[in-house]
Length: 126
Image (cartoon, rainbow, N blue to C red; front, side, top):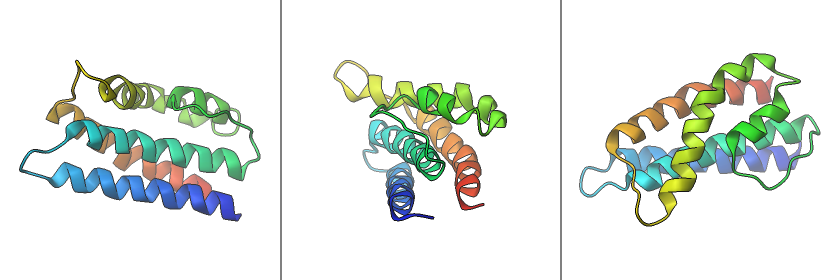
């Protein structure tokens, strides 16, 4: 595994830890930040796999766009499209005034991160 792939993985793990920390906060939790870090963690894992497989990608934060690039290698990932679309919306739309995420959305975001995130990491390592 090359150094850049390792760096993507390290950054993904850092976002995962940040999401888990914020999720556990009981006094004034920031669900927006929690959801953002969930999306960021998956985004960086996707980019690590793309990098590992020498697939070029642009600076994009839409997980479904990144997933589409991976489907030629891992067609089984297609079932993650809805989850990744959900994370993309949470990370982008709720970063601006007028909208905010709720605890139930953070619960779902963490759940998505726990399941697909582990699948993606295993694909990188193997």
